[in-house]
Structures are given as structure tokens and as C-alpha cells.
Image (cartoon, rainbow, N blue to C red):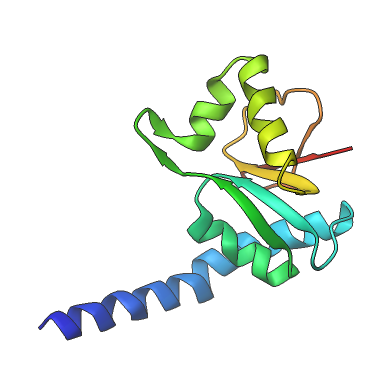
Length: 130
């Protein structure tokens, strides 16, 4: 019974990645490439690394850091976007220290802080380090 359940979960995960998730992730990869990211570029994430790893793999980007998606206060993206500019800068400086060329975050606000760019018509935004 347990083996059957595990196989069921694996099939659902595989189907999710190949269908719905893939359709959502391909535009992210394409837009990031248009914006200048190249294979082997290092990126950092603010959000769910499980889902984000799919577009990163498609673009052959290297995920070098991730702000954990689930925190005691809620998810990392919401916590990041709701923090003050000083708090956001601390997070960005920490992620920059990993050698990341850019940070990609999910669920950006309608009005983005300076330096952030919405990634096409997706629910992601990117911040490029200078």
C-alpha cells in the first residue's frame, strides 16, 4: 500500500512538472534569457525552490542560494515583500555574497521596489546585481 502511494505521488509530481508547471515556467526561462542570463549564471531564489528549480534547469542556470519558502511567519516571498527597504537590502546583500548574478522572487507586489523588474507576464520578478 505504501509503495503504491509513493508511486502515485511520483506520477502526479511528474505529470504536474510536465504539464501545468512546465507551461508556467517556460516563459520565465525565456524572459530571463532575453534579460541577459546565460547558462551557468548563478541565481538566488526567494520562493519555492521545488517549483523554481524547473525554470532554472530549463535555462541551465545555477541556483546557489534560496531563502526558504516556509518560515514561521509565512512564506519567504511574502515576508520579503512586506519587509522594509532596509530589511530587503540585508537579504539582497546576503544573496549577493553567494556570487549570484540575480535574485528571482515569486509573488511581487504591483509596484516593485527600485531595481526589481517583473518577468514578463508571470508572477515573478528579478533583481540583477551590479
